[in-house]
Figure 1 (cartoon, rainbow, N blue to C red):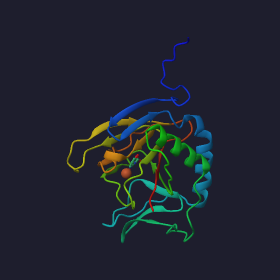
Figure 2: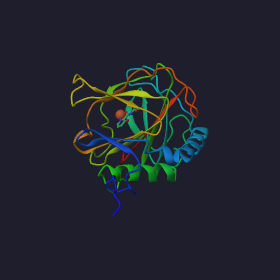
Figure 3: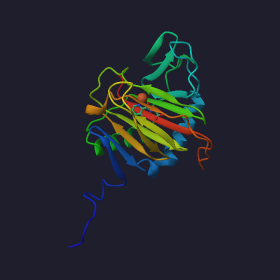
Length: 217
Ligand code: MD6
Ligand code: FE
């Protein structure tokens, strides 16, 4: 009999780190389809370019954003919400590429969330200095489905906190190909991203791009 060190070698394509009940980092989970992801990303940003949205309080966000899928996350003076239309072009957001859908469903299932059906993918682009302050993701209609977060490009320090803004967050380094699945009892934890340090990635240059797939409607 041969020894198998993995519980299920077909499913175990990465190292996993549990952050807390409901949140797991799947290291390198997106690497095997990185070429398809980057090609899809170029098509999306040709139709719906990255832009710096304005917060309801009137501040320009340091992270540039776009979306794909049936709904897109937007912010302007009237608030944060999901909208079927790109408010800059008036057009529907580009469709969700198959590779985003498949990868996020595999990651969700591998973290124990079956039948994940995302309808929104928020795409964040960070340049050195860009940051995301601590927040909860709560514009979605239902907090039952998880969020799947795919990190690409130069590494970032992800802040992963508690259920109150002032709970001291853990710091988790996320790098190219890492996928975080986040749901169940962790779904409403505060989280954010430290100001991005300068770096150079072979495929993404001086950027970090993060995709978060959600079931918004
Ligand atoms: C980012 N991510 O990593 C920002 N939200 O660029 C998020 O805000 C986020 O990664 C919910 C779940 C996972 C995330
Ligand atoms: Fe978030």
